[in-house]
Length: 360
Ligand SMILES: Cc1cc2nc3c(=O)[nH]c(=O)nc-3n(C[C@H](O)[C@H](O)[C@H](O)COP(=O)(O)OP(=O)(O)OC[C@H]3O[C@@H](n4cnc5c(N)ncnc54)[C@H](O)[C@@H]3O)c2cc1C
Image (cartoon, rainbow, N blue to C red; front, side, top):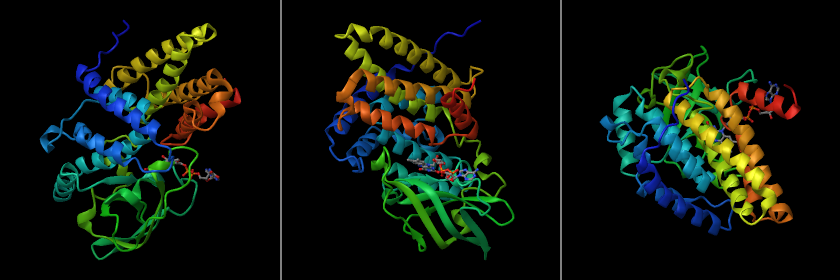
């Protein structure tokens, strides 16, 4: 029997649509593509968004995965950059919440709730980045009871805006450590964020470590072979990454739908894409709730395809005007490419490459 579509928690619709309206206004009024979205992030804090991700027994609201996926779609359709920065802060926050180092967990968490600690995450070199290299990107040499860390975490979003970094490194015996450290600790250098094809204002770039001493009290968990899987949290290609792709696709589909109201030649396209958008949203929420046979990777593969197709369809609908700097269709097309590279497991990359190469 086919399961019924899921109904979202109604509280999402009211609170979030207001937040999204403000985000749209701020992102469309900003002329500077590389400015850190300070006001947007403050709005998320005021709306208590970080507490959605914190368990109740730690003082949070503990939203369920379906509510969170649905909220991410809405937020990403309003402003992808702000929502993306949120996901990286949440990645750090979730690892802090899951930590079995209770004194460290409680200290960081109270700072996050009191809004004087902002943590972000640099862990991709343990999963999807630099995996073909012989040397670990970040090496942790045991020293006294702690570690001396040297190397670089190649991709850290908003590092220069964070008070704390959650970072992974590899010990010579093959185990890995995961630690939380103040971003101004001796030996840490944070260069200016990279100029990116899109999302430059997320101020993403490498963080360099030179003999940075990591005290054992800074470890979020004991060293382990696959330290990121110890906490049971998904590290790449999660439903949350699919939710962001669907959010961006939704912005593009809504544009085509609006255009179709006075351009009958677009009606068929708008209807077809709208139907696919609903079907994918339903699949996303079912996957998030665990009641479907679709894996995270299958879902992400289809979301990547959808976000690329819809954003390019928005460009075709916008015609030459869409190709002029400042039109949202151009930004959406560039932002869609991000999903080919961000938090993308090898199986998803492979499936996307097959589609692009026309291989069945
Ligand atoms: C905008 C942005 C923001 C991000 N933010 C974060 C963040 O906040 N935190 C985080 O942890 N991660 C983050 N990531 C990392 C992301 O999730 C991926 O890990 C990253 O995009 C993988 O790309 P890479 O270039 O590092 O991959 P790599 O696999 O390291 O590839 C780099 C280059 O190496 C070469 N290469 C690759 N494979 C091979 C091979 N098998 N043989 C020979 N050469 C090879 C290719 O020339 C390739 O271009 C971010 C990424 C982006 C783009």
